[in-house]
Length: 244
Figure 1 (cartoon, rainbow, N blue to C red):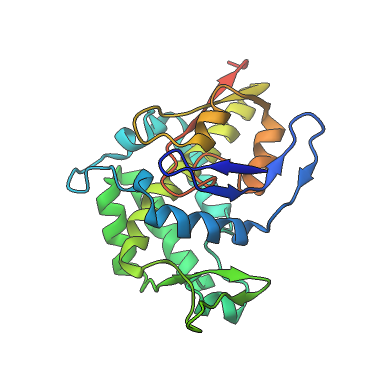
Figure 2 (cartoon, rainbow, N blue to C red):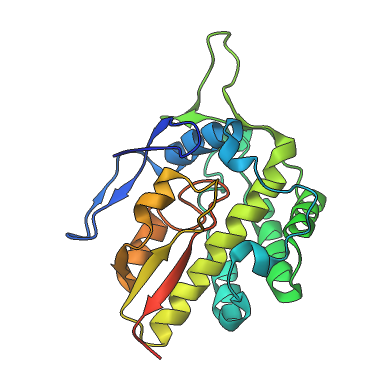
């Protein structure tokens, strides 16, 4: 399946999860999909419209009061494997993905961020303090992709990575915690809700209002098609249907 960026119209391949048959059609691996979207959105205006000087609180950025789901969010932080950021080989480490130690440090930052209600900028600053982020290069078929000049194909420069991780992971983790909270409260399904403004992309516009069962939403997270992981700087949320 191809979807287009709402700002420049560039088409990207995505992993598609069929909600009707619950089957996953894996068009690209999770990391390959991430590489394409990171590279594209680092050059596209859809990630450049935010007020970089504003101290967005977590609540402002997430657009919902996450404290209601804090226990499940913190549990998600501790258990999550951060597979879109975590390296599984030396090649992936060279490409800028994070080591096990760095993932543990990131978990510590995100745990503090949710507990202490840090701003998005503060989260990015703490990530930079704890982790020496490197340039992120594109990987395909287990190898770093080279340009015509035989240089690694850049997806995102090191200086942009901490704010991208802070924005993206805060949304993903808060929504993952919310879904688990909804399941515990007896919700039967969730609705994808996009955050509409001039920067809303076609990916999230297409998903807005679609209804998925709780289990389908968990499958979508595993496939990288989830608020916060479907593309960098995603600001979408889940809203529960049914339950308490």
